[in-house]
Amino acid sequence: MSESQIQRAVMNWWALAHRGLGIPDERLLMAFPLQGARTPRNGARMKAEGLRKGTPDMFLAVARKGKHGLWIELKAEKGRLSDSQFEMLNILTAQNFKAVQTTGFDDTLNILTNYLSEQF
Image (cartoon, rainbow, N blue to C red):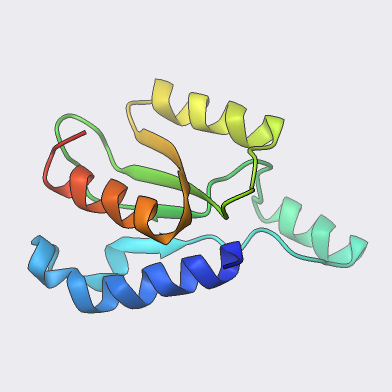
């Protein structure tokens, strides 16, 4: 599966599972569609609007065990973090967020459910 397919599958799962995980509002898990081809003009506009290199793909705006929320950089099976993604995960961790790389659908679900059950 591609990263896009995995992310769509995670969001579909979330739409069905969030209430059972104790999260009443589905919108607390959000995605940041930052990758993909774009024109130089569109890229410049997005940067001016606040696009930041290395921003993780998803954010769960739920505090747990002293962490302000969970940032997820989702990768497909053979995906690797870029230097800017690695740096951003470290920056977010230093600001008391849980910030992780996940690989694939199952790993992402495990991270989400463990975070919500405070088992991280």
